[in-house]
Image (cartoon, rainbow, N blue to C red; front, side, top):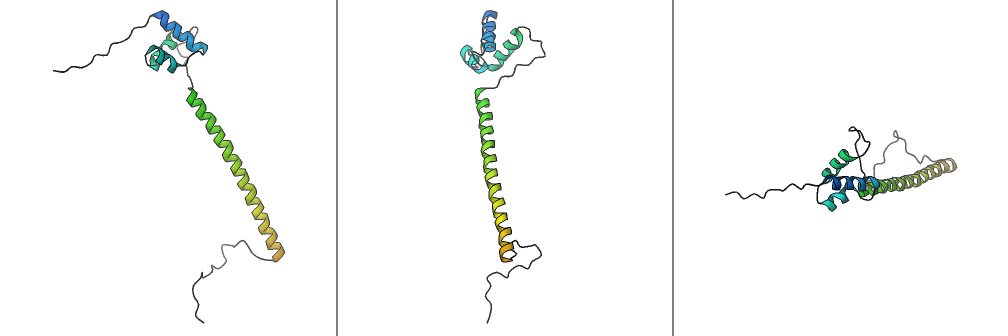
Length: 129
């Protein structure tokens, strides 16, 4: 015999639904907080918002950015700024080293930068005498 637990569907009065929408629209609660408060899904809250929001046409979609999403975006912007600063420092170092190489080549008449056509050294092979 199969004993499945039947899910009871909760019914909320129109007054409660309108109150929840008003609290959402005023910014008092997020959809997630309202869902936790009323023990229902966020989708239920969004359905109420869609149905009971005054003056909104059916084509208007309510989009809410959760605090964690806001924080992630802020963290990513901070990371981008940090990486741009690091890149700037590295570019300054590269420019400095290239200038030093140019000065050394001019001063000592050396070809510090190897051209691709120059012969490769034989390495540290032992030579017979």
